[in-house]
Image (tube, rainbow, N blue to C red; front, side, top):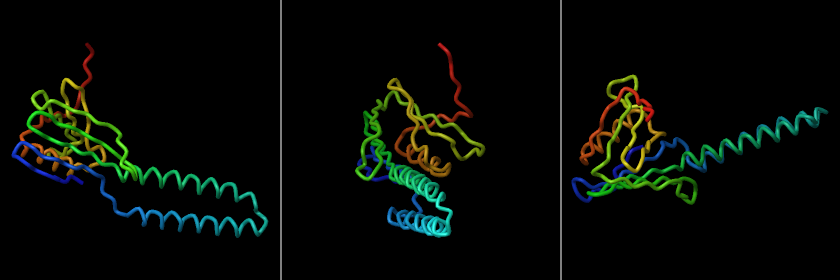
Length: 173
């Protein structure tokens, strides 16, 4: 989801990028505990019938489910914030319950290039990358192609224009 949070001037803005979440954290817990209950119920029924060796495998299944649900939760809480001013563009990425910082990057606006690698459709980009002397940074990996196109349009309104490429090439120097 691409949300323009604040706009102080025509060339300044704050854009929030976050993945779509179809289910809340509470809903995810309900689904997890429902699956754990079904798994334990079936495995305990088999254990009482004499097939007690199913219990360790049920425990492994529950452990794997817990790891996967934790990963989905962490990726669902990921936030990327793009702060654009007249001189600088600041990127912050955080994730988790406490919104711990994953990375913080700053680019000079004068030397910045917005590279958009196009996908199969002529209107929808496959990746959006900021490039400058400070390095390269791909933003919005979790966005859909339509949301990436919306991001490019919002950046265009702020005055950051994209260079569209069919593919990126690696040059040896």
